[in-house]
Length: 164
Image 1: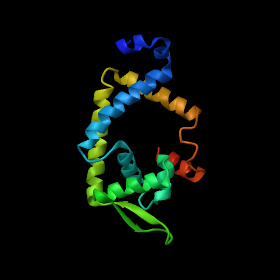
Image 2: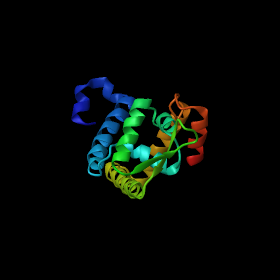
Image 3: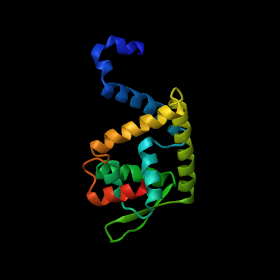
Image 4: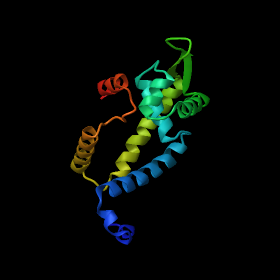
């Protein structure tokens, strides 16, 4: 048990606490690495979703990311400013279809490699079997409690299930 855990007593014995602390450490390192590419993890997730769902609109993207319209707009504007995403006419006059540019596809490849490298380094203390078991257990817990945030509509949940 890390030294700081001993200082907070029984809280450190809770799985949720350990999960949150591990997430904080992982995300801090991931933020630092992604900053070198000019993106944050949320934008990286958006970029990957747009790549998997070319032509999606900002509403779908925001629902999947679990963020409001204003935050979705900021995310997309940031990706457009990077030259990674372009808006094209959508299904109707009120929406835009989002597509990766060539630069966006290159950035997506860099992000995927960065994430793979980050996970390999961060989870290095675990054996491959332990990593697989951790993944299986976390996936099981998420599935039991709804793997997708409740605010994601059923249509989008169906799309996400097909992507797996």
